[in-house]
Length: 231
Image 1 (cartoon, helix red, strand yellow):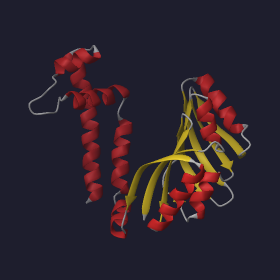
Image 2: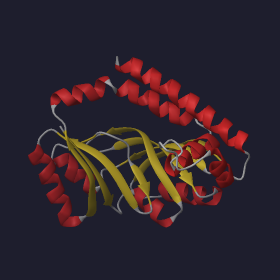
Image 3: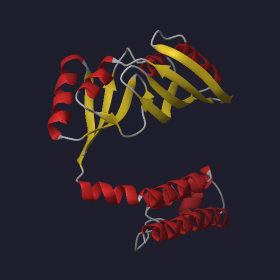
Image 4: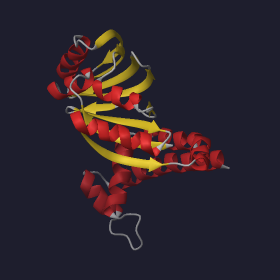
């Protein structure tokens, strides 16, 4: 199996068009792709409520959108479903026996795809065909053998456990942990101290220590849970 991650500009895509014209980004959470139609559930996040409204309107009114259903809209985030026809670039992928392996992400007029092919020749042929009429960049390519693919599937639960641990962190805990790592707090010898971290965030040393401990506790527990999933 060949996994290819591609950043592609395709202006017959409603989400590329909307993200290029408005300060809004789209992330797919579920995709059911067929030869004639693709049903996708999306999360849209915008710079503010006005940008969200204009971005959603651009998607809803696009000629390529056959169905649009809004599920929720809170502040600058919305969840919705669309049914769209095939774009020219996706036609190329599917005509070379390619298939979707991961979420779509559209922002600033560019969409990131994760697509798979069973044979290297299919992947190479699809990329060559895309090159004739589309602007794109390959940002990642992995050739995965069957044994490795089996291990990836087996360990998907452990990976999700770690992802959920990251989501459990508050913004303050995440920012404090990121700063501690980047500043060298965990190096030996340390390049940062509680004092330097406290100065960076404008809080007391006990406060930054508490944020670190809380973040560490959440992540360490998730790591232990993930190790158990691997075993």
